[in-house]
Length: 117
Ligand code: FAD
Image 1 (tube, protein in one colour):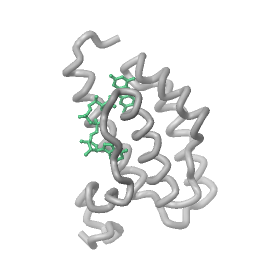
Image 2 (tube, rainbow, N blue to C red):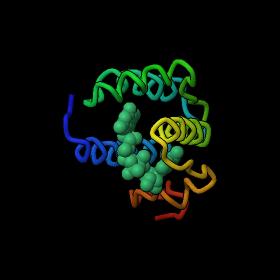
Image 3 (cartoon, helix red, strand yellow):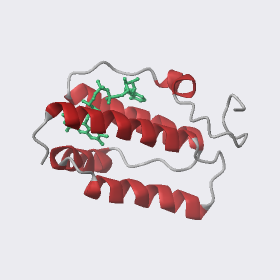
Image 4 (cartoon, rainbow, N blue to C red):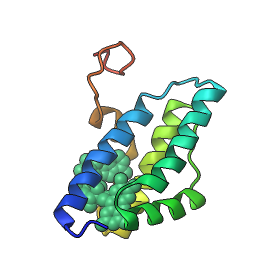
């Protein structure tokens, strides 16, 4: 378990950024294999996340709020809701999930991003 709160917060910020960016790049019309990959990803992630306290909270959260994988927006909105549950527990403000697209631009440059970058 990490003792340093600053390091834990930094890991959290980097991880959330990656996770939100990943769901916002998930296909609008995923194949069964893509859906299964995303579901397995979150279950494995919740077992391997390096902050043990965070990992066990997140495992519990996944039971209450199972990952949604039917489309890009369903997965992105599910993760936004899950992150808001964590925010709530930590006394942080709720994030407006209608602002996801403008907040996470990965600049991946293959024409799939909403802004066409
Ligand atoms: P963060 O919560 O890290 O968010 C970063 C940025 O993302 C915000 O500034 C905002 O722009 C945006 N954002 C905020 N909410 C949302 C949302 N709902 N959807 C989309 N974008 C959003 N820390 C603990 O102390 N205890 C824990 O049990 C714990 N569990 C965690 C579990 C997981 C899976 C992860 C990834 C992190 C966990 N953390 C935990 C870390 C914690 O969630 C924060 O990352 C950390 O406290 C830093 O908070 P922050 O205020 O910088 O914002």
